[in-house]
Length: 131
Length: 390
Ligand SMILES: [Zn+2]
Image 1 (tube, each protein chain N blue to C red):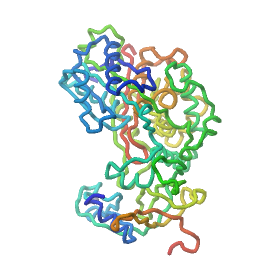
Image 2 (cartoon, rainbow over the protein chains, first blue to last red):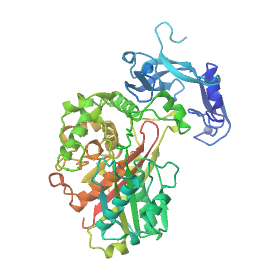
Image 3 (spheres, rainbow over the protein chains, first blue to last red):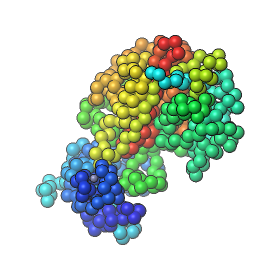
Image 4 (cartoon, each protein chain N blue to C red):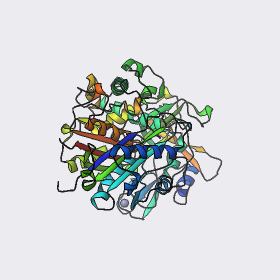
């Protein structure tokens, strides 16, 4: 965490996935940065994402040295948010239930620090979609 | 081109693949000594030095540490570090420095000992070291999982198959059987590859490069220096570099920055992809090769899978003979960085020094390297070499 990214992690701790929005050129981007990577404007504000999107790609890691065994197998993914932004993340699901194009929604994993939570995704289940 | 020609006069690939009793600096030194001897030059002739690191020592200043160790008196130093592509960039920068008159004998060295130091690339977690790591590595993503994602997306968009990726390993292994220094010298089949253990699906163990200790060096010289040498030299016809990255969230992991580095190198050399007789292509994973073939323009985007079928990559008669030393997939990937060995095999091909059954009748060869990860950010660097009498 840096001063530049503190707000992003704090938003996550409040249950909000925050994207950056440039007030000069309108770009919505991720990961958070003080300067817009398209136009270098520093007039950038946080903007809540809908938190929904679909799996752009993924891979399943079954062994990874230095990682808690309980978290394996691990689905590592790029999720394309409905805002168009692709972010690297985890999909917390049985690997057999994940495919390119699977609809997913954000959820947050708490950390030991109260002001930091980590956004991950779970498949949108029938009946809960568009909620 | 009116530019002054610059030549590769010396090349050396360290024969070791596991060096528990050597230091990394020693390997740099051995590579430097033999590459200079290959050129017919001595240490005192060197006035430009290029390296990107001594992996044991992570506090930077690699060129200075190595210039001290080697006892070099240099007027030009460059420690550009973007992973496996660094050394191809060093050659590009050395060409400019020589043309600018800032040096006339440029030495480029690489060495590393990941095999002896148990530094597997791609399979483990690692501490967060950059801002980006806190948006990537916290998710347990390893290098190979990133390339797995690239392969999955390529398969999704273009119908590429695991069997097509396997053809790349098959071609490399067919070549490696003629390289007595290759780590893996046994030819493998498509079945061997797709039946090997899944490491990060859809990639299998045999879709991954080797982990080796070792190193390599090149010596580049000006036209004036070249005139005094007996050695057959290879001319640097063109170079190109490019960076690929997240694009603020618009990343496309089916494409690499080879699209731009290759176009720049081909343009400077005044050639088309069809003019390339031999290609050394960075092969950290089979998917790296597949995307690179498309991005350099050897086929259309998405048609790489079809392109590599039916032995197109196999020397000497395939449409695009590649990695005739066995490449990083079978022979050598010293220091987890393959750009140097790519250039050395291209130089061997143009000097007629490749292993006999895989020697290609080549006037123009390229070497291409990818440093970093195609699924987050990477540098691409391409160099075009030509025979002097082409
Ligand atoms: Zn902007």
